[in-house]
Amino acid sequence: MTRTLPGRTDHVVVVGAGLAGLSAALHLLGAGRRVTVVEREELPGGRAGRLDLGGYRIDTGPTVLTMPELADEAFAAVGDSLYRRVGLVPLHPAYRACFADGSRLDVHTDADAMAAEVQRFAGSAEAAGYRRLRDWLERLYRAQMRRFIDANFDSPLGLLNADLARLAALGGFGRLDARIGRFLRDERLRRVFSFQALYAGVPPARALAAYAVIAYMDTVAGVYFPRGGMHALPRAMADAAAEAGAELRFGERVARLERSGARITAVVTDTGRIPCDAVVLTPDLPVAYRLLGRRPRRPLRLRHSPSAVVLHAGTNRTWPHLAHHTISFGAAWRGTFDELTRAGRLMSDPSLLITRPTATDPGLAPPGRHLHYILAPCPNTDIGPDAAAWSDLGPRYRDTLLRELQRRGLDGLAAAVEEECLVTPADWHAQGHAAGTPFSAAHTFAQTGPFRPRNLVRGTENAVLAGCGTTPGVGVPTVLLSGKLAAARVTGVPVRGRTGTRTSALARRGGTATAGSSSGPRPSPARPTDRTADAANGGTPV
Image (cartoon, rainbow, N blue to C red; front, side, top):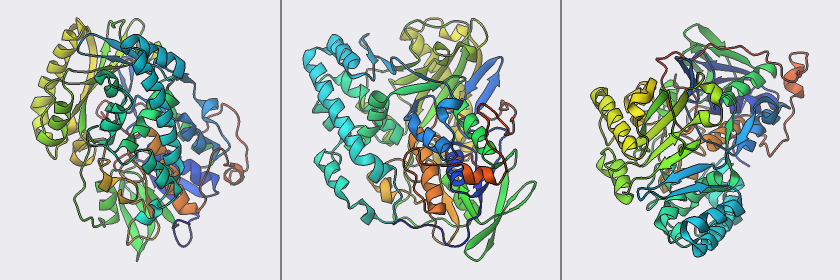
């Protein structure tokens, strides 16, 4: 039995309307709590926001949606459904991988389709290796999900369960790159199933093999895109929360927390005071700790993931070889990770993620126009250029990336750009993200599971943390789970699957939900100055 908040928890204030905060709000509402959500921006989403620029509807946050059933759990907590509110398009292929030698591979989530593609690409032996790898990924996921990922930890002793032995037997505590190499000999294929480690902030050669679970989510469980863009997900979650009785207060900045001893008694914003019985804090860890007035002691300083430069480009043309998601691998590999995580230098031969959302939803751009998001991993500001340096470095690096992509086949890209938004570590720093990275603390062994910053903070009885900096970590699926786990700390009711009910939430309003209705507030579009980019989504910094 994990720890829960002591005392009364009838009214909970959730700080931040990102995916973590909205997930927590829905699970709290389903458990009968009164919920107030406070968000500094004029719209929900946190890092998964929206920028309207010259007729282009730009997602400012994550572009990859996997494991949609985890989002559906949050809707189900109030008797609603993700699939009723959001049109999800499964992406085929999930990714297209383009390599420096000119070869291309479509990454399918269907086993037979992917095996056929691997056979075409690298031969029958590699196709057989892929099938063995897929079986291993599925077993790895089953060993981890409910006991290590979807779980609150009170101490490292929580690791001691039967699934720990299963995970060890599967080689989960070895190195990711070496484990993938047991199944695939082709170095290009090994990249496709190991690059995801960078999402966790660790190079594949140093990451635990357990982090292949991210490759499971990408390459087995499936990749989806919400019609209307990724921002459609938090928008729908906010609408569902409002209909279930939550009070959503947009455009309010939290100034401080009032205390009485070890308990928070009110959240004070720039427009007023909100008395409460408990608080869920979703901003990045430095902001949350500042509000709490306490920073947990750790034997070692937190190590942060690499950051990213993102160019959102509205163009007057596109390039047919680009899929919805295209990974353009450089020739370099191991050296690239050393540049990002040790030397603190920009990639000399970059691997880039190019997302073309208008390939699936043309309505995100004006007629005849296209959206392209170009994401280039870069060092965080702890080890690389500081935030101030990016004012000059950013535009120069933008030009470098465009030249490199033109060399790789996107001829005329620079001239095709009509509208753009460049995001650098300086922007992440301005948003309150530690080390100028939206990907928070890296998933080293010492910062994983029970060793990651806890969602309970010593010295405060009635506050819980959620978001990518705490349990279970970085990524849309895990951030949604962090909100659910935070709610369980408040209510003591762990949710498994579609078990929620909205009866208690609706009873307070004396009404019932109407399919397709949206009684929640309709926030205004993002301001052009609110420029955030592709990130694992947590709450909005205060």
